[in-house]
Image (cartoon, rainbow, N blue to C red; front, side, top):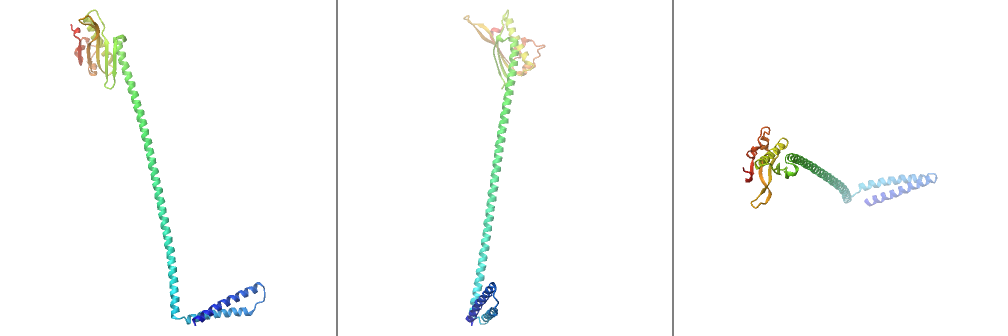
Length: 277
């Protein structure tokens, strides 16, 4: 009966399709309607419904089980397909998220690198600027120092030359690092040996007076004078070596100072025995 129901179902379907097509063709060709086609279509529908009823009534447990199994398998296949599609979408979404996270991390890393490079360049720029400024400052300080040295050196030389004369100044050296000056000049000859020595003392006193007010300096003064040895040879020898620290020079009151006291106020003093009288 199940086979019969199946055959009736298939027959009614084909018959119904035939009558429907035939009716459409006649309508297109504008031919009069035939009751045969309408009745045939109605009978086909009745047979189709009857075959379904028969199929449901006479369905065997085996067939029912098979149909149920097919339905379950179809449902399972559908669910598996849906699950696979869902997993594929989730995987795609995950991969997309990972890709976006990776791109974001790379972008942040790139931005961080750019910031570090910018900071590095800025630091190098600042360092270069500091070096330039430092170099300029150093050069400026060196220039100022050199200018001060030249100024002090020039003032010292003028004060010395004013006392002893350019022609008698043998040596003049100024060292700004330790604020020291070496002065070497020729002693002037007078009418007597005693007056010559006093003239040397006076020259030393006047040199110190010339530098006391505006110049802070420690000085070594060497005075030379022609001396004759036992063999009759005459040479220009140092006859006085004296050291005066700046503090000592500043203490002297030249309004009342007696130049004969030069040897006693010197921080260091030596004279040739030829000057002893």
